[in-house]
Image 1 (cartoon, rainbow over the protein chains, first blue to last red):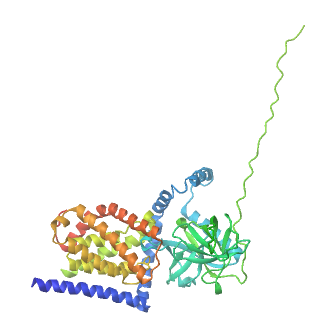
Image 2: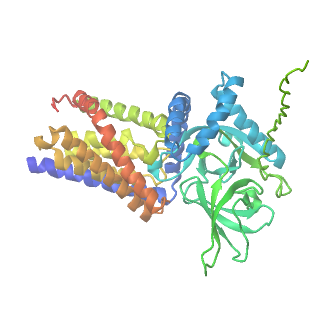
Image 3: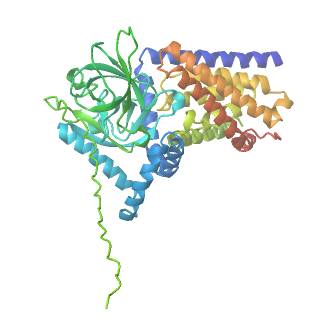
Length: 310
Length: 173
Protein backbone atom coordinates (compact mmCIF):
# COMPACT_ATOMS: atom_id res chain seq x y z
CA UNK A 1 0.00 0.00 0.00
CA UNK A 2 2.80 2.34 1.01
CA UNK A 3 4.69 1.40 -2.14
CA UNK A 4 1.61 2.26 -4.17
CA UNK A 5 1.47 5.74 -2.57
CA UNK A 6 5.16 6.33 -3.21
CA UNK A 7 4.80 5.25 -6.82
CA UNK A 8 1.88 7.61 -7.32
CA UNK A 9 3.95 10.40 -5.75
CA UNK A 10 6.89 9.71 -8.06
CA UNK A 11 4.54 9.56 -11.01
CA UNK A 12 3.16 13.01 -10.07
CA UNK A 13 6.68 14.44 -9.84
CA UNK A 14 7.55 13.00 -13.25
CA UNK A 15 4.34 14.47 -14.69
CA UNK A 16 5.21 17.88 -13.25
CA UNK A 17 8.74 17.76 -14.68
CA UNK A 18 7.43 16.72 -18.09
CA UNK A 19 4.84 19.53 -17.91
CA UNK A 20 7.59 22.07 -17.18
CA UNK A 21 9.65 20.79 -20.12
CA UNK A 22 6.53 20.92 -22.28
CA UNK A 23 5.94 24.56 -21.30
CA UNK A 24 9.57 25.45 -22.12
CA UNK A 25 9.21 23.82 -25.53
CA UNK A 26 5.94 25.62 -26.24
CA UNK A 27 7.43 28.97 -25.22
CA UNK A 28 10.59 28.49 -27.28
CA UNK A 29 8.45 27.58 -30.28
CA UNK A 30 6.61 30.91 -29.85
CA UNK A 31 3.10 29.62 -29.11
CA UNK A 32 0.87 32.68 -28.79
CA UNK A 33 -1.08 31.34 -25.76
CA UNK A 34 2.09 31.52 -23.67
CA UNK A 35 2.83 35.14 -24.59
CA UNK A 36 -0.84 35.91 -23.93
CA UNK A 37 -0.46 34.50 -20.41
CA UNK A 38 2.58 36.70 -19.80
CA UNK A 39 0.80 39.73 -21.19
CA UNK A 40 -2.19 39.04 -18.93
CA UNK A 41 0.00 38.75 -15.83
CA UNK A 42 1.78 41.95 -16.77
CA UNK A 43 -1.50 43.80 -17.16
CA UNK A 44 -2.83 42.39 -13.87
CA UNK A 45 0.32 43.32 -11.96
CA UNK A 46 0.67 46.83 -13.40
CA UNK A 47 -1.76 48.52 -10.93
CA UNK A 48 0.00 46.84 -7.97
CA UNK A 49 3.40 47.91 -9.29
CA UNK A 50 2.12 51.45 -9.81
CA UNK A 51 0.82 51.58 -6.22
CA UNK A 52 4.01 49.96 -4.97
CA UNK A 53 6.22 52.51 -6.72
CA UNK A 54 4.40 55.33 -4.91
CA UNK A 55 4.57 53.65 -1.51
CA UNK A 56 8.14 52.39 -1.84
CA UNK A 57 9.67 55.62 -3.16
CA UNK A 58 11.04 56.97 0.16
CA UNK A 59 12.58 53.56 1.02
CA UNK A 60 13.97 53.21 -2.48
CA UNK A 61 15.59 56.62 -2.33
CA UNK A 62 17.12 55.76 1.03
CA UNK A 63 18.51 52.43 -0.24
CA UNK A 64 19.81 54.13 -3.37
CA UNK A 65 21.61 56.73 -1.26
CA UNK A 66 23.16 54.08 0.99
CA UNK A 67 24.24 51.97 -1.99
CA UNK A 68 26.07 54.82 -3.68
CA UNK A 69 27.60 56.25 -0.51
CA UNK A 70 31.11 54.88 -1.05
CA UNK A 71 31.29 55.49 -4.77
CA UNK A 72 30.13 59.07 -4.78
CA UNK A 73 31.66 60.42 -1.63
CA UNK A 74 33.16 63.47 -3.29
CA UNK A 75 29.96 64.08 -5.22
CA UNK A 76 28.03 63.94 -1.98
CA UNK A 77 30.22 66.67 -0.51
CA UNK A 78 29.57 68.91 -3.50
CA UNK A 79 25.89 68.09 -3.51
CA UNK A 80 25.64 68.76 0.20
CA UNK A 81 26.87 72.29 -0.36
CA UNK A 82 24.47 72.74 -3.24
CA UNK A 83 21.71 71.21 -1.19
CA UNK A 84 22.26 73.69 1.61
CA UNK A 85 21.87 76.51 -0.89
CA UNK A 86 18.81 74.98 -2.50
CA UNK A 87 17.18 74.23 0.83
CA UNK A 88 16.84 77.93 1.47
CA UNK A 89 15.03 78.38 -1.82
CA UNK A 90 13.02 75.15 -2.01
CA UNK A 91 11.89 74.21 1.46
CA UNK A 92 9.02 71.98 0.54
CA UNK A 93 10.25 70.22 -2.56
CA UNK A 94 8.07 67.24 -3.39
CA UNK A 95 8.46 64.16 -5.50
CA UNK A 96 6.19 65.53 -8.21
CA UNK A 97 8.47 68.52 -8.61
CA UNK A 98 11.31 66.13 -9.38
CA UNK A 99 9.23 64.30 -11.93
CA UNK A 100 8.23 67.56 -13.58
CA UNK A 101 11.91 68.52 -13.77
CA UNK A 102 12.77 65.17 -15.38
CA UNK A 103 9.92 65.58 -17.80
CA UNK A 104 11.01 69.10 -18.69
CA UNK A 105 14.57 68.02 -19.43
CA UNK A 106 13.28 65.18 -21.59
CA UNK A 107 10.99 67.54 -23.48
CA UNK A 108 13.87 69.98 -23.93
CA UNK A 109 15.97 67.22 -25.45
CA UNK A 110 13.10 65.86 -27.56
CA UNK A 111 12.10 69.35 -28.67
CA UNK A 112 15.63 70.22 -29.74
CA UNK A 113 15.78 67.05 -31.85
CA UNK A 114 12.12 67.39 -33.00
CA UNK A 115 11.41 63.88 -31.74
CA UNK A 116 7.76 62.97 -31.26
CA UNK A 117 7.67 61.36 -27.83
CA UNK A 118 5.28 59.68 -25.41
CA UNK A 119 6.10 60.34 -21.77
CA UNK A 120 5.76 57.57 -19.21
CA UNK A 121 6.34 57.00 -15.52
CA UNK A 122 8.63 54.21 -14.36
CA UNK A 123 6.40 51.90 -12.33
CA UNK A 124 8.80 49.07 -11.63
CA UNK A 125 12.41 48.04 -11.89
CA UNK A 126 13.21 44.48 -12.89
CA UNK A 127 14.73 42.21 -10.30
CA UNK A 128 18.48 41.81 -10.70
CA UNK A 129 17.94 38.19 -9.62
CA UNK A 130 16.76 37.75 -13.21
CA UNK A 131 20.25 38.84 -14.35
CA UNK A 132 18.83 41.49 -16.68
CA UNK A 133 18.46 45.26 -16.39
CA UNK A 134 14.90 46.31 -17.18
CA UNK A 135 12.23 48.80 -16.13
CA UNK A 136 8.47 48.77 -16.59
CA UNK A 137 6.75 51.97 -17.76
CA UNK A 138 3.06 52.87 -17.53
CA UNK A 139 2.51 53.38 -21.27
CA UNK A 140 1.84 50.66 -23.84
CA UNK A 141 0.19 49.92 -27.15
CA UNK A 142 -2.77 52.11 -26.19
CA UNK A 143 -0.36 55.07 -26.16
CA UNK A 144 1.17 54.23 -29.52
CA UNK A 145 4.22 52.45 -28.19
CA UNK A 146 5.67 49.60 -30.20
CA UNK A 147 8.49 47.14 -29.73
CA UNK A 148 12.04 48.35 -30.49
CA UNK A 149 11.38 52.04 -29.89
CA UNK A 150 14.10 54.21 -28.34
CA UNK A 151 13.61 55.31 -24.72
CA UNK A 152 15.27 58.53 -23.52
CA UNK A 153 15.65 60.60 -20.37
CA UNK A 154 16.54 64.26 -20.06
CA UNK A 155 20.21 63.30 -20.16
CA UNK A 156 20.12 60.91 -23.10
CA UNK A 157 19.65 57.25 -23.96
CA UNK A 158 17.87 55.01 -21.43
CA UNK A 159 17.24 51.85 -23.45
CA UNK A 160 14.90 50.23 -25.90
CA UNK A 161 11.34 48.87 -25.63
CA UNK A 162 11.65 45.11 -25.37
CA UNK A 163 8.08 44.00 -24.74
CA UNK A 164 4.90 46.02 -25.07
CA UNK A 165 1.52 45.38 -23.47
CA UNK A 166 -1.80 47.23 -23.46
CA UNK A 167 -0.99 49.76 -20.75
CA UNK A 168 2.63 49.05 -19.90
CA UNK A 169 5.91 48.19 -21.55
CA UNK A 170 9.14 46.50 -20.57
CA UNK A 171 12.26 48.52 -21.38
CA UNK A 172 15.71 46.95 -21.64
CA UNK A 173 18.14 49.41 -20.08
CA UNK A 174 21.38 50.41 -21.77
CA UNK A 175 23.19 48.89 -18.77
CA UNK A 176 21.95 45.39 -19.64
CA UNK A 177 24.88 43.13 -20.59
CA UNK A 178 23.16 42.07 -23.81
CA UNK A 179 22.53 45.68 -24.86
CA UNK A 180 24.47 46.98 -27.87
CA UNK A 181 24.14 50.29 -29.68
CA UNK A 182 25.98 51.79 -32.65
CA UNK A 183 27.50 55.14 -31.65
CA UNK A 184 29.57 57.92 -33.17
CA UNK A 185 31.89 60.38 -31.52
CA UNK A 186 30.52 63.92 -31.58
CA UNK A 187 32.77 66.08 -33.72
CA UNK A 188 35.06 63.50 -35.28
CA UNK A 189 32.08 61.34 -36.40
CA UNK A 190 34.07 58.14 -35.86
CA UNK A 191 31.82 55.14 -35.31
CA UNK A 192 31.89 52.25 -32.88
CA UNK A 193 29.78 49.79 -30.91
CA UNK A 194 28.87 50.37 -27.28
CA UNK A 195 28.01 47.36 -25.11
CA UNK A 196 26.42 47.37 -21.64
CA UNK A 197 28.32 45.84 -18.73
CA UNK A 198 25.62 45.62 -16.09
CA UNK A 199 26.72 48.89 -14.46
CA UNK A 200 26.78 52.64 -15.14
CA UNK A 201 29.84 52.10 -17.33
CA UNK A 202 29.88 50.57 -20.81
CA UNK A 203 32.51 49.33 -23.20
CA UNK A 204 33.11 51.09 -26.53
CA UNK A 205 34.81 49.32 -29.42
CA UNK A 206 35.78 51.52 -32.33
CA UNK A 207 35.58 50.02 -35.77
CA UNK A 208 38.62 51.88 -37.10
CA UNK A 209 41.89 51.32 -35.24
CA UNK A 210 43.40 54.52 -36.68
CA UNK A 211 40.81 56.65 -34.91
CA UNK A 212 41.95 58.96 -32.18
CA UNK A 213 39.73 58.88 -29.15
CA UNK A 214 40.30 60.80 -25.96
CA UNK A 215 38.86 61.06 -22.48
CA UNK A 216 35.90 63.43 -22.44
CA UNK A 217 34.70 62.62 -25.96
CA UNK A 218 30.92 62.54 -26.19
CA UNK A 219 29.09 59.65 -27.83
CA UNK A 220 25.81 59.95 -29.72
CA UNK A 221 23.55 57.18 -31.02
CA UNK A 222 24.29 56.53 -34.67
CA UNK A 223 20.71 55.54 -35.51
CA UNK A 224 19.23 52.45 -37.12
CA UNK A 225 17.45 51.67 -40.36
CA UNK A 226 13.91 53.16 -40.15
CA UNK A 227 14.99 54.64 -36.78
CA UNK A 228 14.35 51.39 -34.93
CA UNK A 229 15.58 50.41 -32.44
CA UNK A 230 17.65 53.61 -32.21
CA UNK A 231 16.95 57.13 -33.42
CA UNK A 232 20.07 59.10 -34.40
CA UNK A 233 21.69 61.86 -32.38
CA UNK A 234 20.63 60.84 -28.85
CA UNK A 235 23.42 61.55 -26.33
CA UNK A 236 24.68 58.28 -24.85
CA UNK A 237 27.70 58.93 -22.65
CA UNK A 238 31.16 60.33 -22.14
CA UNK A 239 34.51 58.53 -22.55
CA UNK A 240 36.16 58.08 -19.16
CA UNK A 241 39.23 56.05 -20.10
CA UNK A 242 40.88 54.77 -23.27
CA UNK A 243 42.74 51.49 -23.54
CA UNK A 244 45.57 51.57 -26.05
CA UNK A 245 46.71 47.95 -26.09
CA UNK A 246 49.62 47.48 -28.50
CA UNK A 247 48.67 45.27 -31.45
CA UNK A 248 44.96 45.38 -30.67
CA UNK A 249 42.72 44.97 -33.72
CA UNK A 250 40.21 47.51 -32.46
CA UNK A 251 40.56 50.37 -30.05
CA UNK A 252 38.35 50.25 -26.95
CA UNK A 253 37.33 52.71 -24.28
CA UNK A 254 35.30 52.84 -21.10
CA UNK A 255 32.21 55.05 -21.28
CA UNK A 256 30.01 56.43 -18.53
CA UNK A 257 26.34 56.85 -19.43
CA UNK A 258 24.80 60.30 -19.07
CA UNK A 259 21.60 58.86 -17.62
CA UNK A 260 21.42 58.05 -13.91
CA UNK A 261 19.69 54.68 -14.08
CA UNK A 262 19.18 54.53 -10.33
CA UNK A 263 16.92 57.57 -10.27
CA UNK A 264 14.66 57.10 -13.27
CA UNK A 265 11.24 58.55 -12.51
CA UNK A 266 9.96 59.70 -15.87
CA UNK A 267 11.15 58.65 -19.33
CA UNK A 268 10.04 59.26 -22.90
CA UNK A 269 9.56 56.81 -25.74
CA UNK A 270 10.45 58.19 -29.16
CA UNK A 271 7.47 57.24 -31.33
CA UNK A 272 8.57 59.25 -34.35
CA UNK A 273 12.03 60.42 -35.31
CA UNK A 274 12.71 63.59 -37.32
CA UNK A 275 13.18 63.33 -41.07
CA UNK A 276 16.64 64.88 -40.77
CA UNK A 277 19.45 63.56 -38.56
CA UNK A 278 19.97 66.07 -35.70
CA UNK A 279 23.74 65.47 -36.01
CA UNK A 280 25.62 66.97 -33.05
CA UNK A 281 22.89 69.39 -31.99
CA UNK A 282 22.03 67.32 -28.88
CA UNK A 283 25.54 67.26 -27.46
CA UNK A 284 25.14 68.40 -23.84
CA UNK A 285 26.62 71.82 -23.18
CA UNK A 286 29.80 71.91 -21.13
CA UNK A 287 29.29 73.34 -17.65
CA UNK A 288 30.23 77.00 -17.57
CA UNK A 289 32.36 77.92 -14.53
CA UNK A 290 30.83 80.69 -12.50
CA UNK A 291 33.33 83.55 -12.09
CA UNK A 292 34.07 84.31 -8.47
CA UNK A 293 34.56 88.06 -7.90
CA UNK A 294 37.81 88.92 -6.17
CA UNK A 295 37.55 91.70 -3.67
CA UNK A 296 40.70 93.76 -3.24
CA UNK A 297 40.93 95.98 -0.23
CA UNK A 298 43.50 98.76 -0.07
CA UNK A 299 44.47 99.76 3.39
CA UNK A 300 46.05 103.15 3.84
CA UNK A 301 47.87 103.46 7.14
CA UNK A 302 46.77 106.42 9.17
CA UNK A 303 49.66 108.71 10.07
CA UNK A 304 50.77 108.27 13.63
CA UNK A 305 50.28 111.42 15.73
CA UNK A 306 53.47 113.39 15.91
CA UNK A 307 54.41 115.34 19.00
CA UNK A 308 53.50 118.99 18.66
CA UNK A 309 56.21 121.52 19.10
CA UNK A 310 55.50 124.74 20.74
CA UNK B 1 -9.82 19.25 3.21
CA UNK B 2 -7.79 19.18 0.02
CA UNK B 3 -9.68 22.17 -1.39
CA UNK B 4 -9.13 24.13 1.86
CA UNK B 5 -5.38 23.41 1.80
CA UNK B 6 -5.12 24.29 -1.86
CA UNK B 7 -7.09 27.54 -1.40
CA UNK B 8 -5.07 28.74 1.61
CA UNK B 9 -1.74 27.83 0.01
CA UNK B 10 -2.66 29.49 -3.30
CA UNK B 11 -3.84 32.66 -1.57
CA UNK B 12 -0.64 32.90 0.50
CA UNK B 13 1.59 32.40 -2.54
CA UNK B 14 -0.37 34.84 -4.66
CA UNK B 15 -0.21 37.56 -2.00
CA UNK B 16 3.52 37.06 -1.46
CA UNK B 17 4.08 37.07 -5.24
CA UNK B 18 2.30 40.43 -5.54
CA UNK B 19 4.29 41.79 -2.56
CA UNK B 20 7.50 40.64 -4.23
CA UNK B 21 6.64 42.21 -7.59
CA UNK B 22 5.08 45.43 -6.29
CA UNK B 23 7.42 46.22 -3.42
CA UNK B 24 10.54 44.09 -2.91
CA UNK B 25 11.67 44.13 -6.56
CA UNK B 26 11.40 47.90 -6.64
CA UNK B 27 13.73 48.41 -3.69
CA UNK B 28 16.64 47.88 -6.09
CA UNK B 29 18.72 46.40 -3.28
CA UNK B 30 22.46 45.92 -3.74
CA UNK B 31 23.98 42.56 -4.76
CA UNK B 32 20.82 41.15 -6.29
CA UNK B 33 18.56 41.69 -3.29
CA UNK B 34 16.31 38.90 -2.07
CA UNK B 35 13.14 37.14 -3.12
CA UNK B 36 10.66 36.52 -0.32
CA UNK B 37 8.66 34.47 -2.81
CA UNK B 38 11.55 32.10 -3.48
CA UNK B 39 12.34 31.83 0.23
CA UNK B 40 8.66 31.13 1.00
CA UNK B 41 8.53 28.40 -1.66
CA UNK B 42 11.65 26.67 -0.37
CA UNK B 43 10.61 26.95 3.30
CA UNK B 44 7.11 25.67 2.49
CA UNK B 45 8.62 22.76 0.60
CA UNK B 46 10.96 21.92 3.48
CA UNK B 47 7.94 21.69 5.79
CA UNK B 48 5.81 19.59 3.39
CA UNK B 49 5.82 16.04 2.04
CA UNK B 50 7.85 15.54 -1.18
CA UNK B 51 4.73 15.25 -3.33
CA UNK B 52 3.16 18.41 -1.91
CA UNK B 53 6.54 20.17 -2.20
CA UNK B 54 6.80 19.25 -5.89
CA UNK B 55 3.27 20.55 -6.51
CA UNK B 56 4.04 23.76 -4.60
CA UNK B 57 7.27 24.12 -6.59
CA UNK B 58 5.32 23.72 -9.82
CA UNK B 59 2.76 26.40 -8.90
CA UNK B 60 5.39 28.80 -7.58
CA UNK B 61 7.55 28.20 -10.65
CA UNK B 62 4.66 29.05 -12.98
CA UNK B 63 4.08 32.31 -11.08
CA UNK B 64 7.80 33.18 -11.21
CA UNK B 65 7.86 32.41 -14.94
CA UNK B 66 4.91 34.74 -15.47
CA UNK B 67 6.64 37.53 -13.55
CA UNK B 68 7.40 40.57 -15.74
CA UNK B 69 10.97 40.63 -14.42
CA UNK B 70 11.71 37.07 -15.59
CA UNK B 71 13.58 36.82 -18.84
CA UNK B 72 13.59 33.06 -19.42
CA UNK B 73 11.00 30.95 -21.21
CA UNK B 74 7.82 29.84 -19.41
CA UNK B 75 8.62 26.63 -17.56
CA UNK B 76 12.23 27.56 -16.78
CA UNK B 77 11.67 28.41 -13.11
CA UNK B 78 8.94 25.76 -12.96
CA UNK B 79 11.37 22.99 -13.83
CA UNK B 80 13.98 24.24 -11.36
CA UNK B 81 11.52 24.68 -8.50
CA UNK B 82 9.82 21.29 -9.02
CA UNK B 83 13.21 19.59 -8.74
CA UNK B 84 14.52 21.71 -5.86
CA UNK B 85 11.28 21.69 -3.86
CA UNK B 86 11.07 17.91 -4.21
CA UNK B 87 14.75 17.63 -3.28
CA UNK B 88 14.59 19.87 -0.21
CA UNK B 89 11.51 18.03 1.05
CA UNK B 90 13.04 14.62 0.29
CA UNK B 91 15.99 15.46 2.55
CA UNK B 92 14.03 17.09 5.35
CA UNK B 93 10.66 15.34 5.53
CA UNK B 94 10.53 12.67 8.20
CA UNK B 95 13.80 13.84 9.73
CA UNK B 96 12.70 15.65 12.87
CA UNK B 97 16.28 16.69 13.61
CA UNK B 98 16.26 18.59 10.38
CA UNK B 99 12.72 19.96 10.45
CA UNK B 100 12.66 20.71 14.15
CA UNK B 101 15.89 22.67 14.08
CA UNK B 102 15.48 26.22 12.74
CA UNK B 103 19.20 26.54 11.99
CA UNK B 104 19.12 23.44 9.79
CA UNK B 105 16.04 24.74 7.98
CA UNK B 106 17.61 28.15 7.38
CA UNK B 107 20.85 26.60 6.16
CA UNK B 108 18.97 24.27 3.83
CA UNK B 109 16.83 27.07 2.37
CA UNK B 110 19.85 29.32 1.80
CA UNK B 111 21.72 26.49 0.08
CA UNK B 112 18.65 25.61 -1.99
CA UNK B 113 18.28 29.22 -3.10
CA UNK B 114 21.95 29.34 -4.04
CA UNK B 115 21.59 26.18 -6.13
CA UNK B 116 18.31 27.44 -7.62
CA UNK B 117 20.11 30.52 -8.95
CA UNK B 118 23.05 28.45 -10.21
CA UNK B 119 20.63 26.13 -12.04
CA UNK B 120 18.77 29.14 -13.38
CA UNK B 121 21.93 30.71 -14.78
CA UNK B 122 23.38 27.49 -16.17
CA UNK B 123 20.13 26.24 -17.71
CA UNK B 124 19.42 29.77 -18.93
CA UNK B 125 22.75 29.68 -20.73
CA UNK B 126 21.60 26.53 -22.53
CA UNK B 127 18.21 28.06 -23.32
CA UNK B 128 19.76 31.24 -24.71
CA UNK B 129 18.76 33.60 -21.89
CA UNK B 130 21.07 36.61 -21.73
CA UNK B 131 23.16 36.72 -18.57
CA UNK B 132 25.51 39.23 -17.00
CA UNK B 133 29.27 38.74 -16.83
CA UNK B 134 30.92 36.19 -14.56
CA UNK B 135 31.82 38.67 -11.82
CA UNK B 136 28.34 40.22 -11.76
CA UNK B 137 26.77 36.74 -11.64
CA UNK B 138 28.99 35.72 -8.73
CA UNK B 139 28.18 38.95 -6.87
CA UNK B 140 24.45 38.29 -7.36
CA UNK B 141 24.76 34.63 -6.30
CA UNK B 142 26.74 35.37 -3.15
CA UNK B 143 24.84 38.58 -2.37
CA UNK B 144 21.42 36.97 -2.67
CA UNK B 145 22.59 34.08 -0.46
CA UNK B 146 23.67 36.55 2.21
CA UNK B 147 20.33 38.35 1.87
CA UNK B 148 18.54 34.98 2.20
CA UNK B 149 20.57 34.25 5.33
CA UNK B 150 19.29 37.50 6.83
CA UNK B 151 15.68 37.31 5.62
CA UNK B 152 14.92 33.58 6.13
CA UNK B 153 15.09 33.69 9.98
CA UNK B 154 12.68 36.64 9.91
CA UNK B 155 10.21 34.82 7.64
CA UNK B 156 10.54 31.40 9.28
CA UNK B 157 8.06 31.86 12.19
CA UNK B 158 5.43 33.36 9.90
CA UNK B 159 5.82 30.64 7.27
CA UNK B 160 5.65 27.88 9.91
CA UNK B 161 2.50 29.46 11.35
CA UNK B 162 0.89 29.75 7.91
CA UNK B 163 1.90 26.18 7.05
CA UNK B 164 0.30 24.94 10.28
CA UNK B 165 -2.80 26.95 9.44
CA UNK B 166 -3.05 25.44 5.97
CA UNK B 167 -2.22 21.85 6.91
CA UNK B 168 -3.59 21.73 10.47
CA UNK B 169 -0.24 20.40 11.64
CA UNK B 170 1.56 21.23 14.87
CA UNK B 171 5.21 21.72 14.05
CA UNK B 172 7.21 23.15 16.92
CA UNK B 173 10.38 24.91 15.94
